[in-house]
Amino acid sequence: MSVFTACIVQTHSGPYDKEGNLARAIRAMEEARSNGASLILFPEMFLTGYLIRDRLGELAETVEIGPALSALRAKARELNMGVVVGLPVADSPGDKPHNSVVFIDRDGSLPGLAHKTHMFGGEEKMFTPGTEHKAFDTSFGRVGILVCYDGEFPETARSLALDGAEILCMCAANMSPFEDYHAVYMRARAMENMVYTLYCNYVGDEKRFHYCGQSCAYDPTGQPLAEAGTGEETMLYVPVDLSLREEPLRDLNYLKNRRKELYHPDLL
Image 1 (cartoon, rainbow, N blue to C red):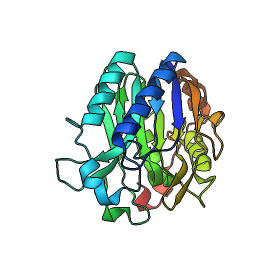
Image 2: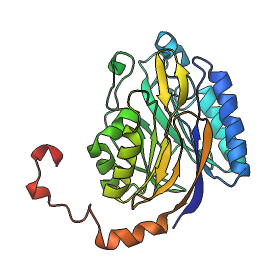
Image 3: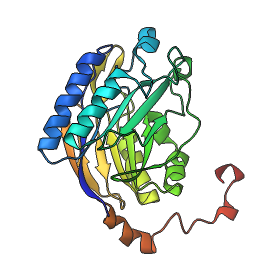
């Protein structure tokens, strides 16, 4: 079973400053690796900032040849480190982008990504919604990704757990007045699906938004492993041991003990 330390980077992002945000990401990777972490998480749309509608198409990248992603992949290989990072991703240059979170593995490969599926506050005017929630295999274990508002729907995490996810990574740009929401949801998602949840949010101000922090991590029984406050930039270090999922899975197996015949057809 996989045992490793994850680092959750609760920070701000410079709107439009992809080069500066990339440099900060690389510095954070180096610091986290020197402190023993082998997986690092950054917030939703971290590489570009979130409120960038007027330059969204210009700043979006394709997964295969995007310059910032290519730089992060090279650094991941150099440090033997996984990276979970948010940015706008276009299927092809000039396409309406997705609000995406990409998983880069230790060897620089791209085993999976998630396009945000549930649009919040008019995001559908800017982004092409994703169409699925699929887990994928990594060197850390089987991973599922949630992008901010997606994690507020229990069906998304349950779908990923039913697809074998052992770890749920949620990257967000959660703002006031929605303090406390995501920390509660992430603890519940951990408990009801018997998975590790790693949650990464912004702090600080971006135009009209005040981001509320509260990044956190929970083990498969909902026990807190790391929790941040609402205002400080910080790097949380989280121990992950997937063998610890085995004990709760024996007797408190919500996935196994479901009775689908009793549920509303929309839940099947």
